Length: 514
Ligand code: XMP
Image (tube, rainbow, N blue to C red):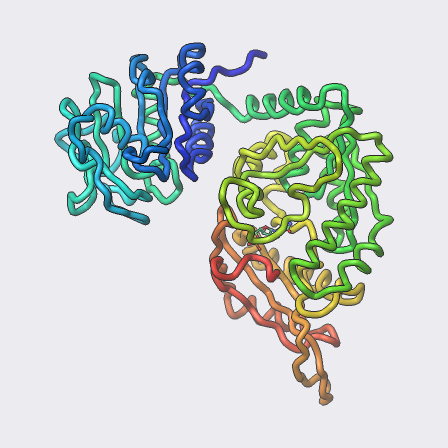
């Protein structure tokens, strides 16, 4: 099968949303590529794209060190959509004589966009008269160059939100149509690609799966790769994609860390069989994990120790298989949160990001987002894995014993409590509406009374949240009846005297307790 042709070139001008433009186009069925301004000209000459998108960026067009888009990009007669900085650059290039083509005036956050009904742009076909959109800019265009017309403004007309010159095949939007907060359901990018550029929707999840396989095969060459499969959607889907392609060159294994959910090992084995993955279960390091992680109560130190043992196990496994490469199911969001992408800050050390094991790393999913991986999982009949299981962190139950050293007994309490809560939520028909459920044990003792006797025992906290991408979350509120059912079930354990519920948003609270 031939590779699908790239139809749209995205020129990256430094926006934090550039990847999201590509993701949205992929979702709509159009293949695109992201390139720096320096590489763009040569690429356009050789590949003749149907459309070009100029991303946003934090610079001002007047800055000496602003990204330098070659102005010859305008000479190809190819439709161009400039977003934010991209639009300002178009204004600037078409009206260099107007010194204040672009003015300062910061705007971050939601903005109501009014589309000019007399000058209705093809770009905004099938949209309502007004939409709420996301803006994030320092400068904006103060007056349009001659030949351009204004097609949208902000509510009080203070900002030119869109302009175009159809004859020159140039369109600009000041707001960000690519992000979720803009309520356009991707119609604007779809109109640009389909109606303006004449692109065809020919990029399916099968193409993406094939590309992931081809890319990994090429990177691996004659090497042997290990892949840790956690039973989570990312690593399992990736192993399912690669197993038929790499055959015996792929060694898939599951590490039982001792911090797994109840029946986890059996479930993961099941999933692997269904996905066609030949999976080895490695459980001889359980005690080592508990012993090493249990020596601290500090959240980051715990993760560091977990990561250390995890790394050692990986190294052992790699040696046994004579591996040359390690394949990771790391996603775009993991890299953002662990501070490995762009200039984002470290929130939590992830146990599997930047593990230096002396093996070459291949991360074929690192420009994909969670919902896309869930979509790919469907291709392998892994719906149950996708629809019925909530995410679970690599360090597992170790992150759910707070303020007290982890030991086998406490692990068993949270494991059993997690199972009971899950069953109650399923029985009440809400489990699938919740993005993640966390049941954690707080290591502070409080007084309780059981069977007429005083008990000095622990507290379990139940946290249920909603989200699409885990970058932000909000509480999923349970009904009083469900809360009561959960607390009655959990206090049956002799060492538990209280149950609390936590629906704090992220930020400031993270999803997990540590
Ligand atoms: P936070 O707590 O950062 O969690 O809001 C966001 C999502 O990431 C999961 N998580 C982890 N996953 N290793 C993982 O594999 C980790 O160290 C880790 N920490 C958090 C968390 O369960 C939630 O789904």
